[in-house]
Length: 279
Image 1 (cartoon, rainbow, N blue to C red):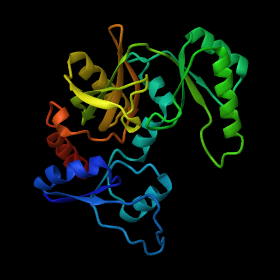
Image 2 (tube, helix red, strand yellow):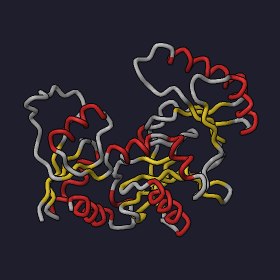
Image 3 (cartoon, rainbow, N blue to C red):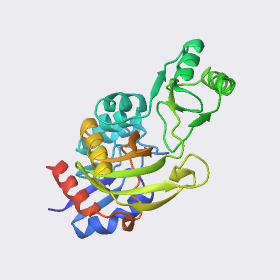
């Protein structure tokens, strides 16, 4: 059965998936959702049978949905669920270990936030509830630093056009190993360790990756996360510290790293998932 797969990213994932999917009769079609000028009465959009990961620009993506009305591997609700770090951690807290975390909703009560930070202990990590690529994630050493960061956030949040202003306070796990596990259709297909100078190890910010075995515990935690959040194609970010594997967050739009880094047959499972979603 031949299919056309609409892919809304033209980055490494798009490049790496083309050949293996083509060999299985799936044509990868680029979908532009950034910087487009699109007629709403007569939109010129490519034909595709299945969408691959709902675009992050929900307004443009909604037009794609309205015109094409196709199923998605990770639809809008799935992507939105994964992007909300607070909701993700709350949903997972009863099924896997997560770092101790407190939501500080806007407008923030400074004394309550300071008390929560004292209870977590310093240093701690402060991060936006909705963001990607490590942007805005800050390590805070003490109360003075916390006050300074919150002052800065209040200043830049004062006149935004839109945006979520809540933040998370999260316990800092020193010497933690940072691991991304790829889970496709419920099965962990491989894992990479992210490493580099500093304490933030995000690939988009210069971190390197190396393959690591998906041992029983890593696979079990990652698969539990994917099942709990009902995400078919997901990167599960795990922190291994003092013998405990914590889930720090998830990414429903994960980049496919060099397939050689993965032990499992990533593309075979991805092809089966695409056919399942297509029906």
